[in-house]
Length: 356
Image (cartoon, rainbow, N blue to C red):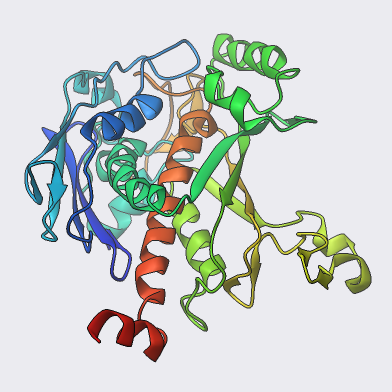
């Protein structure tokens, strides 16, 4: 499946080393101001090749809008966007044409489809997430109208956990670091791993602010399970926690968020109860595994079941979580935009307001 969402929904297309990647977005309300500069600024946040802490594949990631926008506003018809690939080096992957890279989807794609695009991983490459950032920017333009904001940053790298959280600092940090006191330590760890031809894992913290009460469609389209699905669809994500990540260690008397007239006294639930937003901030952590593309000799097999040792070539991120943090925001924005549109039809009062 290459699509996501119910009302606000999108379909991505393209491969890592193909001519282009892109996305078709449907369900965008007509009359939305489409700020192309904002969309491009979101792409620039995720763009590769910006510094030594990311892959050196230097793509401009320039978005071209092909349809669905007229005189700067959405028309209510599908918005198609394309991002042309301009800095592929497909020859770097000739040595893995018949080889399964450990930690990658090569093995499973081959066994499922009987064919695979070995150039950078093809469809399984994280390059596809650039298209998600484009659609996430559209979703954020909707959320902006309702003063809903989404923030993210990196809270842990290589097992070293940050002790403070500053989302404003993360916006300025090269590695989206949430703890300014850990930023240099984390940078040193990344460079060390690169020099050792290895990689690191990390944890992204994400926050959604100013949500109304009532978003989420029980029982099988709950807000938390769709957020989890969205995050788990991102390359290299291995886990997600919503709310207090130590809740499983607590007693009910400690974990329950008591309620007063002015709101909840705590937010261990992370802003969601029974799959529905409760008006508190949604707080999440997303766990990324180490980038599987490393430059050490590894044992594997080829498409003929021969056991071999091989060394990878190419350009790869030493840590997925950094640029992945931007993608988590985009997927969260898509989920919230979809939930807002779904929620509009859940009461007769809302329907009568529109049609009376």
